[in-house]
Image 1 (tube, one colour):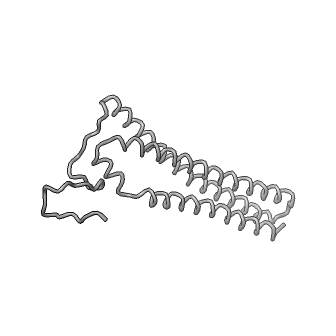
Image 2: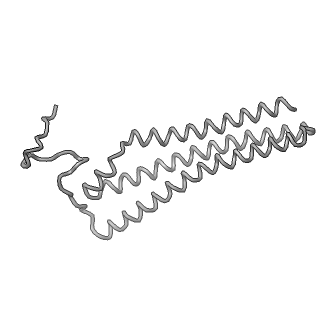
Image 3: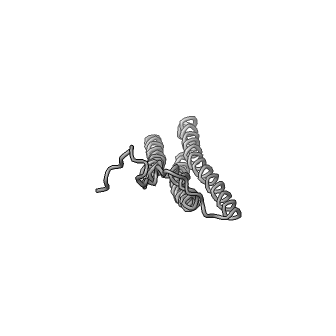
Amino acid sequence: MPKPRDPTNTDEEHTDPLNPAEDTPSELDETTHAEFLAIYADASENLRFAKNQQWRAVLYFSLGAAVVTAYGEWTHWKDPTLAQLLLVMVWIFSLASAGIILSLQWWQSAEARKIEYVTSKWSSFSFAARKRKSKLVSDLHRYGMMIAMVLFLELATIAVTRIFLLNI
């Protein structure tokens, strides 16, 4: 067990990586640092784009499922062949949307690893700031949202299927 730190002793070495006593500057040369900044900016933009695309996949599927169901209700399910075709299309788009969400999640994970690598080469203050939120908490948030999105897609698909099967 590490010995407790005495706050009155200013000569005692400070070893907490989340609260460095002094900033240890990056050892990167200017060109490499500029490249790392560009990589960081690109990875951050890719993360935002992928998250936005995940939500769009959920939104577009939801709108499509609602329109197909509304069409069936509006036409009073008069054409069973068309209704079956639309139901098959709902399932195909549901599975495709889930696949898109999963692939975008893997992409986000790769971009997060890229950011982690780049920022590990920066100053100790930058490292401390990035480590304020644990990787476990970040992963729980990210994968929890992914599971919620996929679960929503599949539950909506089941609900649409039930409506279709009751009417055709």
